[in-house]
Image 1 (cartoon, one colour):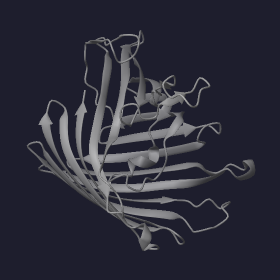
Image 2 (cartoon, rainbow, N blue to C red):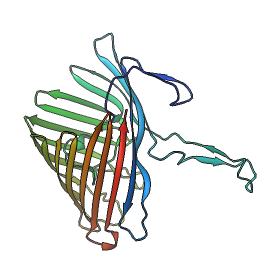
Image 3 (cartoon, one colour):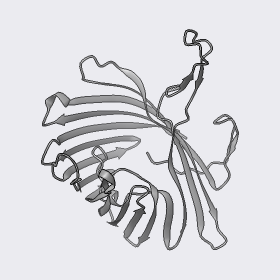
Image 4 (cartoon, rainbow, N blue to C red):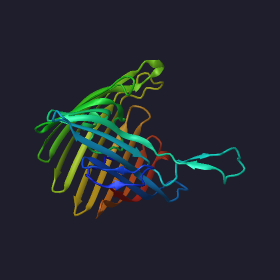
Length: 319
């Protein structure tokens, strides 16, 4: 989930051991999503769980050159209270009362720095995926994983925006470019990346991921569709052909109510032949609070035992 940039000027004493202060050009933001969820699997029970549980800081400063320097850091907890803690036993396994539980904060995410101006935006660290310029309908089946160590450029020129990225061999080993054209309610995007898809015996095999998508928005409604393909790792023990996916999503929002219906398929020439239908409903209660529900039906056309329906009701608060 992307952090919404809302400028705040507030002192916080209690997020960590050391108080934090947000200044006029610093943004502290986050979200807590807690839900009740279950599936149609035999023996499955209802449970309280989480969606996104995270917070982060972004900061921007004007440089002497007239450009803007910025940075970002986010911590993803994504769990309930005290889950993920580590228990330290001082050497008395028969006595739990002297054990110490040390909570782990979570993983770092959205770690990057950059410089931007009228020429565009250069970023170092976690960078946007060029191929996702064409993935516009959903991420049920995702075209590619994140690039946590790389360099990117993004810029807009009238109705056209572009994204280019690079990651060295010591990181994700990728190079990509994407472009989007938007006019009125219509948009079309295309992106491609050549990136490492296998590393057998140090060979560092690479392949091309590519996506193209179109969208149209009107009167509170939108429809988006995309197609993507992932080139097969030819060093794999079993060859199944390139992986392909097609998705379409319809959304509508009015007076705080939102609804979305997504259909997606993913297949290759071998073991993969999957379908998914997802229904999302939400109501904004105000003050950054959202009540929502999601029902997802996933079908494995090669093995019906893997079919599953999952559902949740979620309350979220952003800050």
